[in-house]
Length: 148
Image (cartoon, rainbow, N blue to C red):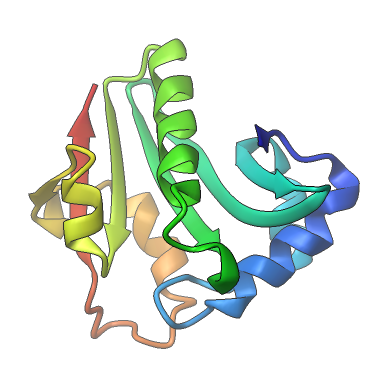
């Protein structure tokens, strides 16, 4: 079931995201999770967080979809897609016009309507997070956008 996390669930979110850190996801400190707790959606099974993702508003009409992580035992069950759709529903509710992301899972997001764009089209603020990545500046991810 998808819900919004409580502050006390930040450590569980961090643990899940950091399982995939530097393998497609940026690691997040506990401080960063607390600061962004309202950005997150979580998927719980029997009170255990098995999936997480966030929608971070960048500007009046733009948000970034970030940090999609699903525990390995729960993959291929639609949890990731449900998290993406919940974030996109919120983006629509907030009357945002576009949601972008950086990913190495191009085909996965294409199935949900995201389209490739050139990274140079992204706001400069995005790159402040990229500096923390071990792949910077030789990023192997692609930029994608969905117009709502």
